[in-house]
Every structure is written in structure tokens, then in C-alpha cells.
Length: 199
Image 1 (cartoon, one colour):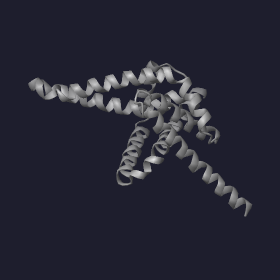
Image 2 (cartoon, rainbow, N blue to C red):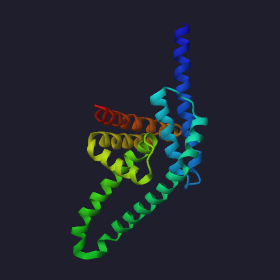
Image 3 (cartoon, helix red, strand yellow):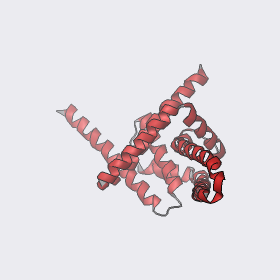
């Protein structure tokens, strides 16, 4: 009976942690400009959960938010500008005449590279103490080198978007669950790289 109660309260602790992390992240995303720092902090917390089985939320989240704010905020501005310019170029593509048949494959490839890099960028910042330039370079390398992991993460994101669309109430925990799932995949990549370097 005590063992059952222990398992029940452990499950309740984990479910509560996912809910709390999700709500904090949503609240800190409201100002919009803090989306990147809040997302990095969320990934840092899920990294803590995976590595240390420590499901605390509030204190580590705000600690990581503060520690990574400057770097992740700058990266967020850069990423938004870059993606915005890419979107504008894509919309203007039809106005360049026959050149669109040359530019379309180039922009299409760039779109995939942006998507692939975006999969690894937050886990990379959470796991490595590197500046944003190296974070982008490493994320791009990881996403191409471990393509199956990247495609699996994209599949997860698509599945979560479908779940959120069909059951909007899942917004209360779907984002933290997604962060945990994607970091779990990326953590396996980081572990492989560490083993290769240490061998």
C-alpha cells in the first residue's frame, strides 16, 4: 500500500511539474520579446529533469531565464529578422520572372535548413555553454548529421500541433511535454557525441 501511494504521489508530482512549467512558459511568452529566453529556460528545466530526475520548476526556471536572457534574447531577435526576410523573399519570388525557377530551390533548401536548425537550437543552448554563433553552427551540424532524430522531432511537433488543434485544452501542458520529448531525443545525440569524443 505504501509502495502504491509512493508511485501515485510521484506520478502526481511529475504531472504537476509539467503543468507548472507549461503555465510559466506561457505567461512569460505573453510579452512576445521574451519568447526565446523563456523557451531556453524551459529546455534547461527539462534537461534537469532528464539528467537529475529533479522535477522542481519555479526556482530553476527563473534562474535559467536570468542566466540565458541576454544571449537568447539576442538570438531571438536575429532569428526573427532572418525568418522574416526569408518569408518576404519567398512571397516576392513570383515577381522575379523566370529567375523564380532558379531561386525557388535555393529558398526551399534554406527553409529546410532553418527548420532543421530550429529543432536543435534550444536543446543545444541548454546543454552547451556556447555563444549564439556556435549554437547556430552546432545546431545545423547536429540536425544534418543526425537527420533521423531531426525528422522524428519534426514528426513530434506535427503530432502535438494536431493534438492541440483537436483538443485545445491540451495547451495547459502540451508545450512542456513537447520540450521534454524533443530534448530527450537531442540528449541521445549529445550523449553519442560525448562518447565519441571521450573514446
